[in-house]
Every structure is written in C-alpha cells, then in structure tokens.
Figure 1 (tube, protein in one colour):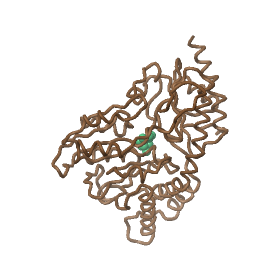
Figure 2 (cartoon, helix red, strand yellow; figure 1 turned 120 degrees about the vertical axis):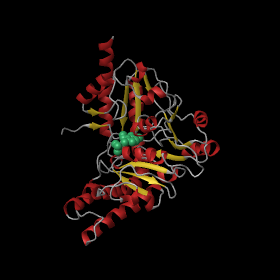
Figure 3 (spheres, helix red, strand yellow; figure 1 turned 135 degrees about the vertical axis):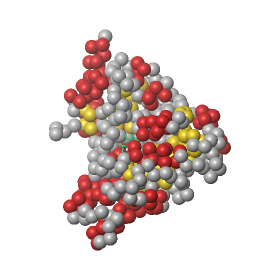
Figure 4 (cartoon, helix red, strand yellow; figure 1 turned 180 degrees about the vertical axis):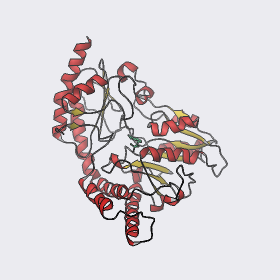
Length: 393
Ligand code: PLP
C-alpha cells in the first residue's frame, strides 16, 4: 500500500511490532486450550495469567477483577446488561443512566433497557446538574466515558462519583475507558469506577480483544454462558494469543505514555493550529476559544491525540474523499457513524447545528504519528476545503 498520512488512530491504531512477535508463539507453538491439564495448556494458562496481571496493574485493578472479552463493545454491553438485572444490596431497581455522547456500545444497551440519558454542554462536558436530576434510589448503574471517541474530551469520574454519592449512593459506576487508555493514567483516573472497559486495538494490540474490570463484590450476570471461563463471567475458550497481545500492548503503552502524550500532543497542536490559520470558518470542538487563528488555544480538556474540527459550508463525505485522494486518511465522526447523511449524535448533543455538524472531521493521531503526516495534512486539507466551498458557491 502507498504511504498514507493516517489520522484514524481512534478507529484503530497499528499493532506494536513487539505485540505481533509475542502473539506468534501462541498461534504456532503454544496453541493449546488453556483450560486443559497437560503442559502446553498450563503454559497457555500461565501466559494469560501473566497478561491478566499486567493489564490489572495498568488499570489499577486486581488480576481477579479482569474479565477478558471479545471487544470494547462486548465489555460495554456486559457492563450495562450484566449489572442492570442484578438487584443492588439496598434493593434498588434496575434503572440505567448514561450520557448522551456515549459510544453506541453503551448508548444502545441503555436505550434498550429504557434508561435515562444525560446531556452535555457546548464544550462536550457532562452536565452534572442534569446528572443529579436523573439519579434516584432506583438507579442501578451510571455509565459515563472517560474520554470521548469523537471530540477527545475527558471527564472527571471523581466529580461524577461525588454526584452519585449524594443522589444514588447504591448505584454502580461504569466507565468506557476505550479512548482514554492510550493517553491517560486510567489506573488513577478511574479509581471511583466499579467497572472499566478497554479495547486492545486502540492501544497497539490486536482487534477482537477487550477487557472489563469488574471490582470485587460487584455482582455481574454473564451475557455469554458456557464453559464457565473468566470465573463464570464470560464463557468461551479464551483468545490466548490476543490476551497475550493485549498484555504486551498495555505494558508498552504505560511505559511510553508520558513521552507519547508529549510528542503527539505537540503534533496535534501543530496540526490544529495550522488548519485554523489556513482555513476560515473552522470550529474546533472541546477547546477554548473554539474558533479564530493566532490566539493560544486551550486544549487541556482533550486527550493528546484528538483533533476534531467542523468546517462551515463543507460536507464531510466530500472532504474525506478529497483527503484520501491526497493520501490523508481520517473520519467524519466515530468509525461507527456514516458521514454527512448521519450527523454525529455527539455533536447534536453538544448543540451543534446540523449544517455545521455535517462538516465534521476527526483527525485522530496515535503513537505512530509523525511530523510528515502532519505536514501532508496541512498541505492537502486547506485546498480541499477551498475547492469544496468554491464548488458550493
Ligand atoms: N467505546 C469507545 C469509546 C470506542 O471508541 C469504541 C470503538 O471505536 C468502542 C467502545 C468499541 O470498541 P471495539 O471496536 O473494540 O468494539
């Protein structure tokens, strides 16, 4: 494939070569089912236990609290469906609550259960007063993400937990930390959470492997039942190679995180500042000020890899087409939404008019992003926007 400037790391980021290497052994050599009794099975079991230890430490959990599963989506579903039906110790009901900007992996389950959805402000921050109003003794679970997959905006779980302690003290707190883990110390920031979900392919691990932290004492109803794997919380033969891969990817992510955040944050700022300077009529989400060139921009509410812009008078689909032609791969909203015909629910919740949301572009950077990528984007995107505006005039 020709070299591309890849700005879709929030959708999926490349695997670290060390992860590919360490997984190979579990496809080719140690291929046994880890539940078996013989030596190869014991080796496979030991490898998954080691990965469990590493991931637990990275998430501030105990190894027994880790439930390996098949994706971030599955972990989110398990958190919501798996706790909603369990009566709380105080005998409260099964009402579930989430924010309006959750990933569909949380939002859909909450909607299916007839739950309550809490709004955000124009900057993408959770409305804590609305959260307080949505809580009562019937609430079983509150699910709020740590970092948003479209805007990159980060929330304080400590503040959420404080509101919950006052208005729904018996409720559990779940956080979708899928987009947070590459950038933030989840172990520290998710301390108040009873359940935490992550996904390997967002931080240099393989696709199709996720994990849900289920704190000791939290009652969880398995959604896949069978052989009793993962301490009866998720049936199915474990994906040994994938689990080994997620362990190694977590280790690498944590050990390099400070350097990555520093370096990628600088690249992101150069990209966003450069686009704001080169193009009029750009709104950058989750920052202050949201528009205008030249003045220093405060991006401290966002993860380092996130650059999310809306171009007035432009359709994202057309912009993505021209971007790709210039070798720039990006996305309109999250990887699950489908472009201009379907403006993002996140931007709608933030009060963006449909006309502006239709021109959204998510440029998400990752550990592998380079200065050359940024320079390519800065050379390709401004003329593409100008071309589309001319065509529409
Ligand atoms: N949650 C968030 C915030 C995400 O960004 C994603 C993927 O984009 C998911 C959950 C789903 O993860 P997976 O792709 O592993 O199913």
